[in-house]
Amino acid sequence: EDQVTQSPEALRLQEGESSSLNCSYTVSGLRGLFWYRQDPGKGPEFLFTLYSAGEEKEKERLKATLTKKESFLHITAPKPEDSATYLCAVQGPSGGYQKVTFGIGTKLQVIP
Amino acid sequence: GAVVSQHPSWVICKSGTSVKIECRSLDFQATTMFWYRQFPKQSLMLMATSNEGSKATYEQGVEKDKFLINHASLTLSTLTVTSAHPEDSSFYICSAPGTSGRAPNFGPGTRLTVT
Image (cartoon, rainbow over all chains, first blue to last red; front, side, top):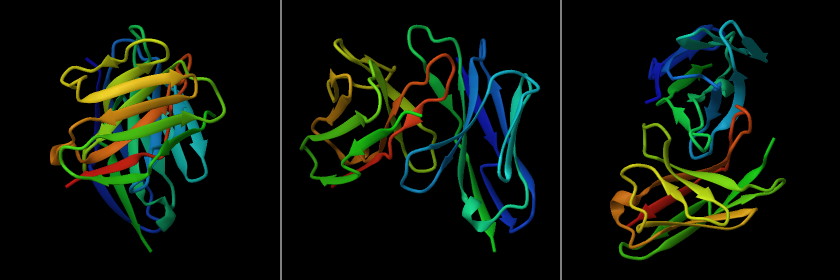
């Protein structure tokens, strides 16, 4: 069974204080690892897809990296508007449909 | 990417009544849609896979007679919570699948509160 563990569960940063969120995963045959941002009361908003170890993706202050066992979401010089819950998810072999398994998320709060 | 909408965005109903939530794909035809449920401080949990023209596939532990799914067309899937109870209060989100390992796109979610 696919498993995703995210840490920390909550993170409080001062504006400008860089940090990293961790996503450890277990999947038999990774087809894709996804990062989403979720604001309160809203659906997840897609950020990145990573497919293979060593791959990196960047968008503004966010950078996602992938190894064979974990992924990191690096946040450089965060701003208050980066406050949200960041979700990691993996997609394994479809088995007939494309099932995605989510972690519990990291709730990020950036203090001005 | 695929745009997914949901209606209503929030609903309050009395215990014992039924509630229907709609999920629409706005810019593509979806033969498959997914329904998730998210309780406070918990992960998104897949409830079922909605299949156009055939029966939905439910995850283990999800009561198919309680959570009725209908995929009437290539752009509309509905989730009906029958005989709702307070423990069914949750955030329900639908998604369109990504193809070939691409990330799924999610709707805005529906907050259901059963009183």
